[in-house]
Image (cartoon, rainbow, N blue to C red; front, side, top):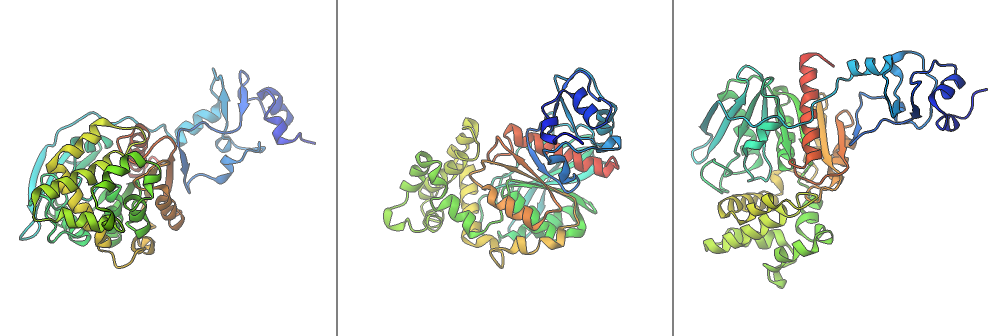
Length: 408
């Protein structure tokens, strides 16, 4: 009769192996029953049994998931697993410059900036920036292998280098979806991988739902479904419970009699005929988000709130989209239409302590879309530039790259 599995965990590997009639795999170490990990990945590709605390008798090398403590030897099983699940790169790639830039006129009013970097003959991937209104930055290129990927970045209407700056006219989610298709056609790209975080995840979902046949894979970060409860959480006092000191300057710009709806009160000021009133509201709006987007304060990020040009586009466009409910036909539009993209290989990366886009939204998306791999980064907030999130985003691109290369 076999000993209790929990008792086996306490035994040296040789003894535990002998107890179940299995040759000792790690003669120089003690047994630990779960693999170490810096993040939790809920993937449909991995059997739930590997997370079980029970030691289960196994026949066949590749089915054995064990970790050794103080390991100074390697088993055949471990080597087989390395072949089956090759170690993924997680460091950001070196900084690169675009090999091609341009402007595309997408309407009588709007012209958007775009750029390409990496391999001109590589697999195309398009990056959707956050905000809306945040614009792209050179660091966005570093999530992608420049040898494998043809990396396309663009500034959405009114943001970054796109013109006219901070313009709200003809600026809706569906205008942006149309612009993405115009850019794809302009660059003569048949289909591409999409990558977006925060508002970029919203836009990535909206675009993929509208044009699933053009999407080869999806990577999402800091999920934002633009539902009322998400807007209320961040702009109507929910997140203030965690950042009361940061909330007060945002709150105090608005007179008490207008505090029933901060989004509406800021909309009034961000669209004032007095430019300084717009700037003051834009600075307060932007600093609130910049000061809460990292788990630990990031001074470089916070300083962006002092840049009037950046803040004006960021705050005006964000507020414009939020007061118009994302221009979606219903509060649950994205969740209701996930069925259209369930066949697309997708990876979701979410910071556990994300205050801007709390994990409830990523969890709701995961529940509606269990086919997508869901990775929770335990020691991270919202920003893609936090080390743990950046590492998982690079690894996610490596996974999709391996799929495209036929490695897995």
